[in-house]
Image (cartoon, rainbow, N blue to C red; front, side, top):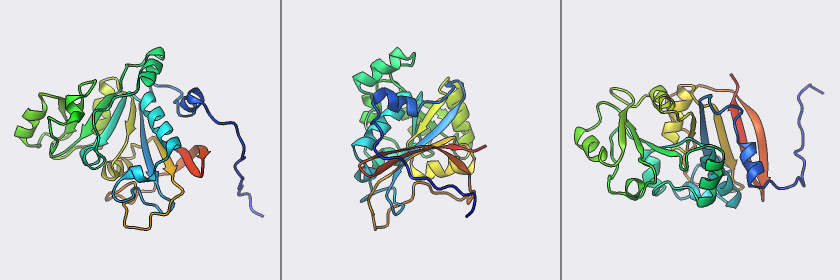
Length: 249
């Protein structure tokens, strides 16, 4: 027998209420910049069903999704994910707004979109119905015409010269006082953060589904770096595993 320990998670624990769930995903010190990534995957490693991540979700996953947004200073998403997942204006519920204000946070988190080509529609609900003026993070080489159009509806910020640099993304947000960064994808953006060793936490939901198709992974990139994470917790709901991992540094 080796020293390796394998334990069985205890069944029958009391369910978590909203406050307990928020506590389970809280950080010890909000002044310390934290890049947290949230994804869902099938049992066989797919990030989507029929091209959308929503097909993997369940009520418990939505509760965690909403909780992570409630705790964040800024929600960060790649432009491709905004289009493919049909994002509209990012607006928290009245209950979440009340909770944030009671805990000294801004009523709504900021919403930051990453786009090297600025292929975003300025008249979309993402901008037109936004409760807080969105941020668009791009490069200095992005098309000038698209930049001008988006500057009417968002703060457009260069985070690199030829391309968007992951470290510049984080630095730009932190300089604005947005230390708690929640990245909701997509896989390419996640991959760039992994390559730059900027991921502090991964909140990964494992759906009890076998996708069986050609779905993409949760990360994609050129780097083959293996970054060691430590398990913070595992929650369970109707076969769905809700995990939280932190970077082991």
